[in-house]
Image (cartoon, rainbow, N blue to C red; front, side):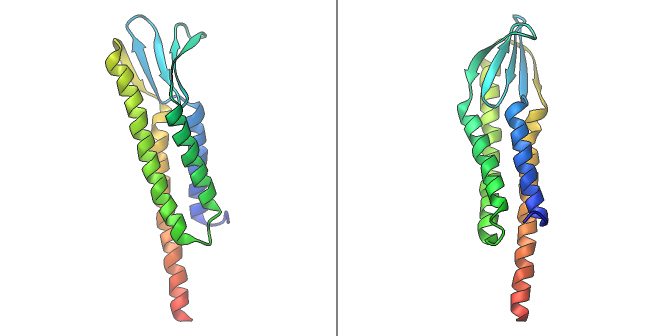
Length: 156
C-alpha cells in the first residue's frame, strides 16, 4: 500500500541502503602514497587512481546491509499487521546501529594499525543515519495509523 506515508519512508530506507552498497563510506591516505577506500563489501587499496587491490573483505557489513534493506522492503507489505510493522521498525533501527558500529570497527581498525596521513568520511557514512531517521518517522506514522484504527473501533 504505497499511498501510506510509512510505505514511502520504508521504500526510501531500501533505496538509501542500496546506495550504501555502491558508495564508499570512508577513506584513509597512507604515508606510502596509497589510499584505502572503505566500501560495503571490501576495503580497497589504491596505488594509483586507476589500479586497486583488495585489502580486506567486509562480508559481515555487506550481509547486514542486505538484511536491513530487505527487512525494510518486506515491511512495506505488512500494512495490515501494524504491531508487527512497528516491531520490525525497531529491529531495523537496531540493525542500522549495528551497521554503524561495524563500519566504525573496520575504519578504526585500519586507522590504528596503519601509518595514516589523512582520514576522511565519505558520503556513504551518512546513509545509516538517514535510515535510522526514516525508520523513526515510519514508526511514528504506523503508530498514528494504529491509534486512528483503534479510535474507529471504539466508536463502533
